[in-house]
Amino acid sequence: MHRHISALLGTIALLTATGPATAQENLGTFDDRIAVEDVMARYVWAVDSLDADGYVAVFTDDAVIDSNGSISKGRDEIRKIVTSLIQRRDDNKAKGMPTANLYHVISNVRITFPKPGEAVHQSYWQTVRRDKDGKMTAAAMGRSEDRLVMRSGRWLIQSRKLTVFTD
Image 1: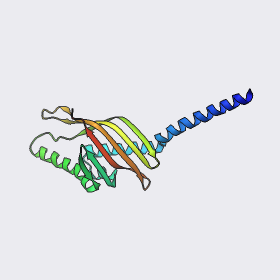
Image 2: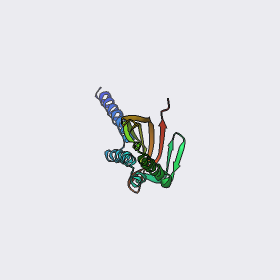
Image 3: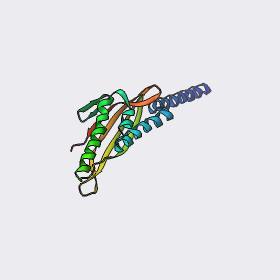
Image 4: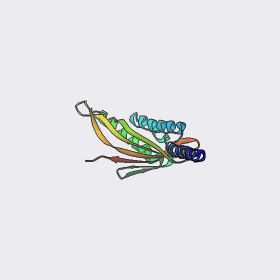
């Protein structure tokens, strides 16, 4: 009887130890999760503050952004995303119109680590901007899926897929 109970307890201990360990592996280490969160926060702050250098710094050299089918490849094309926002702001300012600065709101974040050195960051996002009447209004909404990789000890965005909600 003792043998059966000992075997049963051993099996239960093995099952409970294996289950959470596997799930925990997909959640990554605490340090990796914090680093991925930091990269994504720096991404948002850089684009909202029109910091082109800070913006491209969070991407790999070969990064790709797919925004509803509009593709930007590599840091030079990715930099143009922010420099075109700067140009639009300056043009609007010269015309006496609102600058159309964007402010991102990110929610429902999910981070997983499919394998060592790779992370997936999924979220919903909303951008707000000042309209012609000076009121803050929603500009767009959608979801994003970012794939990050560890390069030279740093997490960087390798691909970014933005889906803008159109209906």
